[in-house]
Image (tube, rainbow over all chains, first blue to last red):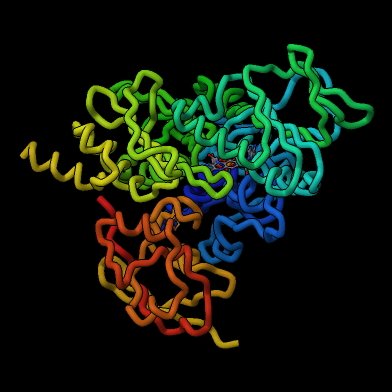
Length: 413
Length: 108
Ligand SMILES: Cc1cc2nc3c(=O)[nH]c(=O)nc-3n(C[C@H](O)[C@H](O)[C@H](O)COP(=O)(O)OP(=O)(O)OC[C@H]3O[C@@H](n4cnc5c(N)ncnc54)[C@H](O)[C@@H]3O)c2cc1C
Ligand code: FES
């Protein structure tokens, strides 16, 4: 019998971590990491942050140096994606026609930026931001003085808006909802970031739906449902991502807006795992049913897939967390808020440093820290502990969040 | 150019000499040499999972910690004001040859 091999599809954050973890645990067989894009692996967060800034380095940091893969005997197939999955024969077909056998398969195909679908969406000058190539194209297009219209005020849209404004572009953000980052944060945080961007001359238009993009050979203006038009040299659509689940779906693996996986990252096929943005984690016992687009979650799932393959217990459950930096102001979020949570503001937005606590049944469900990193780790631990918290204590920034935790822990002893 | 070799002391207390390549942060070197630091934020001072201890004179010879780095470190359980650094914030430099780097314990 030939040597056992694990094939990993996608060399993004999740795929690379899965390969790394398998070598750490001493997987004895082959590891084949297949990536449709050419070139070294790379970090994605800088694509919408540092990389777009004026004078930024052309280098995008790699997830691992190329020679790392050689040293670990992780075989890399680059520039050729997987186009077919045959579960019966246990092999994948590459776009160049080649085939690779697997004993275990890890699908780490990530997500793709949701494209604009209104008339004119194919005009040159419209950008998505997902890959290194996208970031290069956007950086070339955004020149001082350009009119940049961003569709969508989520993390990506706002990070791009900050970069565009700093480059001296006339920047407009069009958003369907009535505030920025409405999907992920509360009103008070939205307003804070909105003001921050306004101070840098970014214009927001809320409650507006883009209906058309017009231009003669390339974009010139964006049209909204109320008939307004916005002049544009560059249009960036930051309207979310969709999981790249087609391969799994076509092969009959269970998908529900994401490849369905359990806490061990197993799919409905025992030989196939899935990790990262492409997955939906369903764990009915613990009431979990979610698709997350974050590096922390991609890495945790990758580690759990490798652990399961190697017969190890799943890693300690980490509270989901995320970060974004806009105009130098850092927002870090731990836990997952729900719109029904009680909101407690710790400190004042006016001071520029504050945190927002989201309480559910007296326990901390999530926290946002705004230029208040000192609260982040403590808050994350509080979320993980599930302890009841004393809101008065916690709301006063004079008390360290850790102290508030400790007192409570003591009380319950 | 001579190689920059450093000594890394892992969480079990074992010492290993590794090469620190130019252009790499200390975090990247640790990660590429299989030390168990997750570095989930990729070196952007967001996660504190790259926390290490350096010897006091080494810390004093480096440029000071930024406010963000300090805030994250101060909250770490094992924080030591004289020794704690986020390894992602330390660039390679030949004067760092031979230093001892100790991985901070994993957070609970
Ligand atoms: C601009 C930007 C900024 C971000 N900033 C942050 C941030 O600050 N913090 C944070 O937590 N998250 C951030 N994210 C989200 C984060 O990057 C994702 O959650 C993370 O990359 C998910 O990892 P993944 O491995 O699942 O997917 P990806 O990293 O997207 O990797 C998937 C890989 O699979 C490859 N692939 C897909 N299909 C195939 C196929 N059929 N064959 C071969 N290869 C294939 C793709 O080319 C890709 O390289 C950001 C994302 C973007 C785009
Ligand atoms: S790698 Fe996250 S803080 Fe250093």
